[in-house]
Length: 99
Image (cartoon, rainbow, N blue to C red; front, side, top):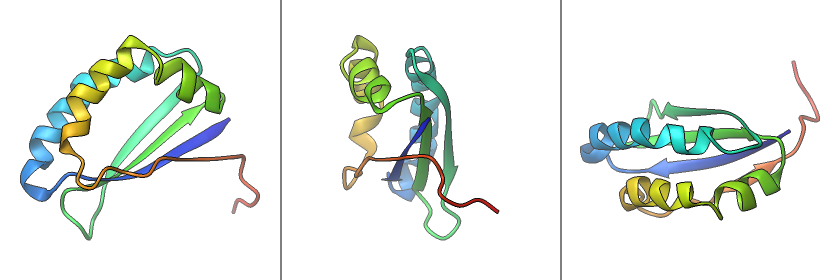
């Protein structure tokens, strides 16, 4: 299992519209083979900033299975216009420590 991580800056004035677009977009990603689950959390210190965490079976499930699909085109149209700046997306492996 891998964890996709991105900090999403959309701006406080667009946060409500972003949340509505996100709700519409969620079925697109969850229909992808290899998708496990997803969380989007609002930042407590910075209104309009969100943390995206997506669990995938593999990097390929995300990079090929989702990003090369028609579903991603719709995801991109719904969500990418909100991001300023565009987020850096990174993938993380299994935990090396847990408490």
